[in-house]
Image (cartoon, rainbow, N blue to C red):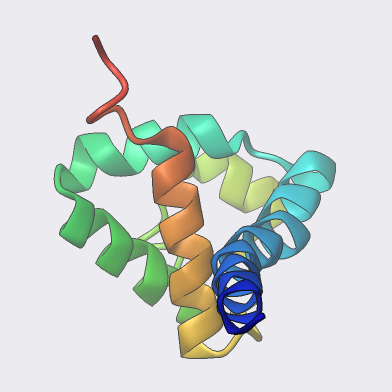
Length: 110
């Protein structure tokens, strides 16, 4: 019984990051764009490592700045920059981790 409870708690804790990501990132990007996959590879091209990509995403989400945006100037002119994330630091980090795991290339190429 205890094992079952512990397993359930672990599964719920792992799924929370994905839920945060889907509810807050995927749903919004489906409506307003741009493609999360394209943005991932843009960030990877500019920042090159997992640590740097995650740090840049976190900082941008907390304090969006058009000078730090990777979006084309025309997109920003038409749509502006996003509003700062209202997620807690912990929730935002979980969402970014889910995002990274969704699109990372390392470990997926055989």
